Amino acid sequence: MPPRPPLAGTTPTEFLARYWQQKPLLVRSAFPAWRNPLEPEELAGLALEPDLASRIVEGPLDSPRPWRVRHGPFTEADFTTLPESHWTLLVQEVNHCIPEVAELLTAFDFLPRWRLDDVMVSYAADGGGVGPHTDSYDVFLIQGLGHRRWQVAAPGSSTALTDGLDLQILTDFEPLHDWVLEPGDMLYLPPGVPHHGTAVDGPCMTYSVGFRAPSLTELLASVVEDTLRHTDPTDRYTDPGIAPASHPGWIGPADLERVRRMLERSLLEPETIALRFGRLMTERRRGDSAGEPEVGIGPGRVEAGQVLRSGVPLVRNPTARWAWADPAGHPLLFADGHAWVLPVGALGLASLLAGDASDNPIDREALRHFDRVPEAHEALLDLLQKGLLSPAEEPR
Image: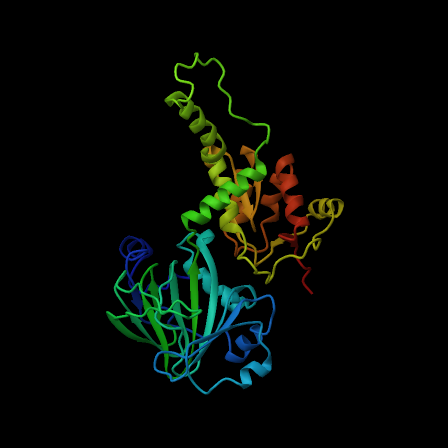
């Protein structure tokens, strides 16, 4: 499958202007040379792994059985007890385990890579689905095997949820669109659009490419938590040179301005915002350890230095989340929730490491230049120690 935007006749510019976060887009033959990269049996095998989040949902609307959701890891015996129809298996983070699934992401490089969440893969027996619902993030639904019927309602048209369920299923779902997708077809859905997918004419598989969209609550919690962790506890409110109080109980405009400046200095400076946001957007999903470097897996400080001096090619951990920023010209590098403040002369290092996470191995000659900069050298040592970078294996 070519690493091109799977938008058929719509260019990335047109898509972003007319559809992204605005309205659905159905793309027939988005992947015209589609080959299903994962067999159903392989997906079931991944659902047995404790490091991957998985679910089995039973009982769609046209089934006499009630809705039921179970969370993995599962056992082989769990699959032998499933009915012949009306159930769905969903597995998160499959792109961390199956390189062929990870390759799908190259088709979406017209979007910021740090916005990407994961590729969830679902297998639905005939009639299987998870019910009418809305998502709080952008998603591209790629049909991988069989046929799935997607019913899509108008944004905001369905809000009421069914009581007494562990699933957030809409009770007043009225579809506006009704499409059946074949292998290689793709449906884009922005946040808040009610939709309902059902396997028709037999089982099917769907690849859901989701994009992170932190809520204001998450952003505030992350900023406050990170600020408390990195703020000097001796930094206190001060008011030198104030005039005698005319009303002792009054908090005046000048007092509030001092508080505002204090908070702005701690929370809202461009570099501070970039640091907090970069850490948040590169953190792994809570509970996700698929492909995560084990503690101490990287070399020690001395060994890491030897790796750099040896000149061997370096590769990124393929499951790590990378990003970079340069607020006010100060380069910042992020990987898996960690941040490195680099000197101005090392701006190219941040771009080199995080600009194209699919570019492995890293250009060693370009890296050698930054290795001579002390702060950049320290960042490379840290990345090696954390297992985010590693020496490339010698070809056999």
